[in-house]
Image (cartoon, rainbow, N blue to C red):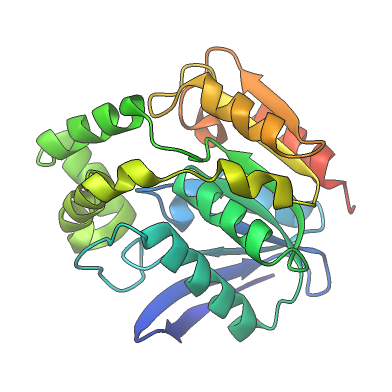
Length: 252
């Protein structure tokens, strides 16, 4: 089963899709910084077929959601609040979360701020503090936004607003205030089971970030994947899906 629609959240429209059985446990997917629902194309059907009621949505500015003119320094906290409002709109009171990169940080914020909401948490390359490696990689994207190959990819992912989104998102991350990002003190407050995933060749973060994240949360599991970069969901989808399914628990 697939359902889809738009929800007006804080004055703009967010596009969402719901896949899988009507009464299965809910799995919420939060995409990475320049991703969208399309980023989960190798996961949505898989988890729906295994009994999960999968909610994926384009955060403000991405995919088929409304355009976003700029990203404030606290944009991930704002996105966490909007995700919560969308879940309330959908009538979802408890779910497991699968968050990637920016979406992982947003998921972490939800788990820390609303522990009754989050059943289980899977974090892929989540940012818990500012790193020079992250900024260096984002600067590369910002310095060549009109590359023909990448411009085509951004348009495929986000439509005509793709190039403007890339520039606005990168400028948001490159604000001086982003160097204050540090969620280490929040980690002990995470009470749900957590799986931390990161590719050892991740272009946007060192492996230390994943290790610190896993060590900072009580009883978190860590999976560092050799030879994989920032997108294990696409670089090694079969292994990724099976490992996450095992952690979440099969429902079929």
